[in-house]
Image (tube, rainbow, N blue to C red; front, side, top):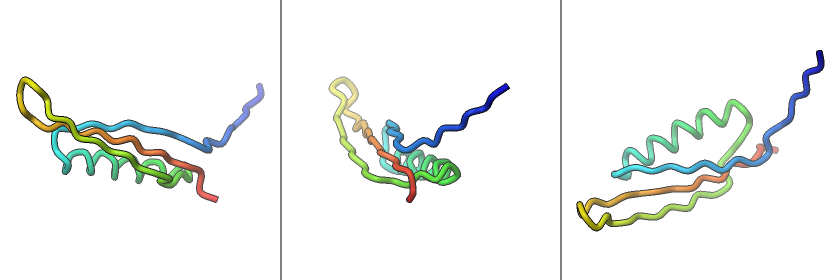
Length: 69
C-alpha cells in the first residue's frame, strides 16, 4: 500500500453572516485551524448587502490562504 501526501499551497474559503462580529469569529476560527497545516492569510475580500425583504445587512467574505514559507 502506498501513501502519498501532497502539501496544500493555496486554499480559498467563503464566509457569511448577518453581523460583523459573527463573521469575524468564523474567520478567526478558520485562521487558527489553517495554522495547523501551515497556511497563513494572503488576502481578504468582503462585502455587505442589504436584503430587500427584511432590510437586514448580510456580510460575506472570501479569505485566500497560502502556504507559509
